[in-house]
Length: 136
Image (tube, rainbow, N blue to C red; front, side, top):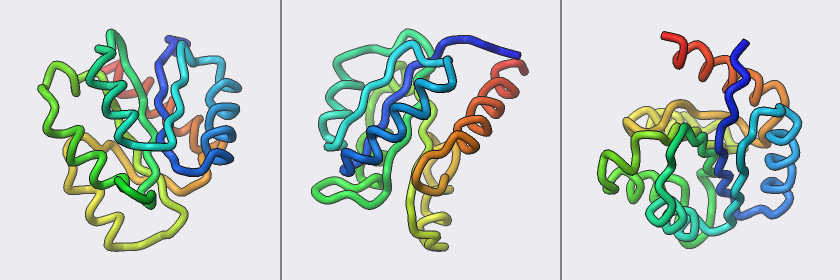
């Protein structure tokens, strides 16, 4: 079992969903840091200004005002490769919209579409998936 500490970023306009995600991530015992943002633009600024030295898992909500999850990913994908490289992005949504799921698959930097809210079971799956891919 890999117990490497990872960095996490949660981007969701709901304070409650950010709080829940923060607690679930803390409970894994795998977090080196957790940053939560209610504005995707703030998260982008953080990513641009703080070069990630190691793997950072990003959970971004699709449905947000001002800048939605898709717009965040589109802006993220314009960043230089060396900045994008350590980030693994998961998109979250409470609506199972086939168009959203199809659209998520078009972004090379998005690993997977997940249902909201983030749960312990989902976190276990994300960490197992990370362990499997980092072992190969």
